[in-house]
Length: 148
Image 1 (tube, rainbow, N blue to C red):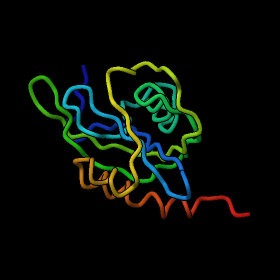
Image 2: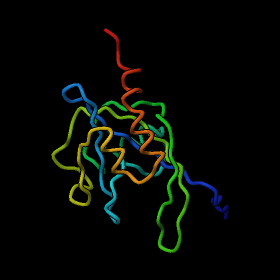
Image 3: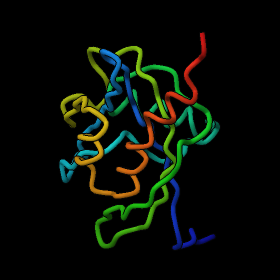
């Protein structure tokens, strides 16, 4: 049986955001175990493009739907806690412009979710590279915004 290489595992994540009163806000969710603030993420799904898997994670973990980009904003690394050890994971992050918040979803009640202004969201997450991606969002959103 083939061994999974120990270097890095890959995950996909959605960075849910909305524009409210001309300002960008980011939706963070808590992890189920440590209750840390993070973005909805999970493992790639067989038969699904990475951005679609990230979109599904956002719906399951945060109860949001919207327009997800098919190119990642960037990636960050973090140590995933396992029963007996930690694994290094590389997470590809896809911006998701939220258009709908569901009344109920799969992991409702298992996690908290909250909207934060960009800078505050960046302060809430532990991973410096994720904070950097969150801070880069306004510039990215303005770059891809349709022109009139």
